[in-house]
Every structure is written in structure tokens, then in C-alpha cells.
Length: 130
Image (cartoon, rainbow, N blue to C red; front, side, top):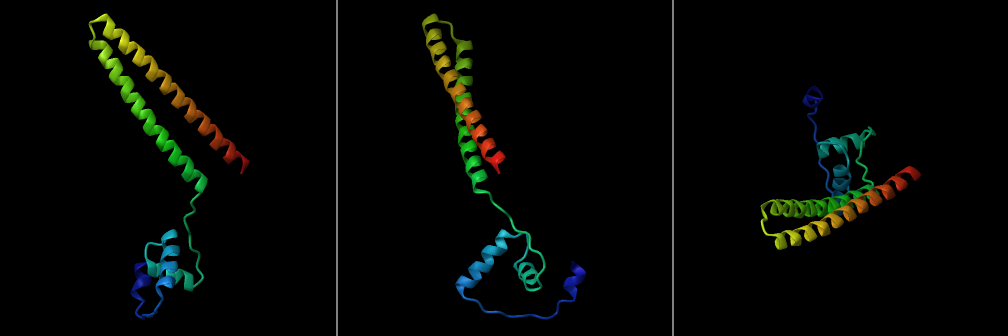
């Protein structure tokens, strides 16, 4: 590539409207070209241009999974705090209170796990239909 660049001694100046430039820049950013000049050169000489493809359903699924992961982390942190507190308790009434709280957190945790499993199942069904 460097050897190819060393032979490039001619320049072309081109004026564009803001809309034209924005359109070219958007297409360039969607491509794998590292420089705008490389993208334009490939386009001018009808060379192949590789572009990124974004699948909206995958993006939506990833967003949902990230939310669920954060919720699971919060529930897991609460669960760890409950267990840590249970180990330090010496009075029975307080211990019972923490056991009840632990059971509530455990139910929430399993509910979130089931939500994730259902969501993954739905995603799998969509992908298998394609």
C-alpha cells in the first residue's frame, strides 16, 4: 500500500454541498475503509467496498439482555449481602427476618433467570425462522 501511495502525486479538488458530504461520510463510516480518501478511491474505480451490517433484532436483543444482566447483578449483590449478614447474626428474631428477606430475593432471582431463559428462547425461535 505504501508503494502505491508513493505514486499518487496528483490531486483532485471537489466541492460538495453539506448534504452530499454528509451522505458520503455516512456511507464511509458504514464501511471498513480506514480513510475517507480510500473509500472515495474505491468507489470511483468500482472496487469492492465492505460495509458493516447491523441487525436491529440482534441490537434489540442485546439491549434487553444487558438490562436483565444488570438486574441479575443487583439481585445477586442483595443476596450476597443477606448471606453475609446471616453469618454475623446472633439473635434469633433478627435471623428470622433475614431468612424471610433471603427467600424474597431468591424468588426474584429465579424469576429473572426464567425471564432470561424465555427471552433467549424467543430470540432463538426468531433466528431459526430466518
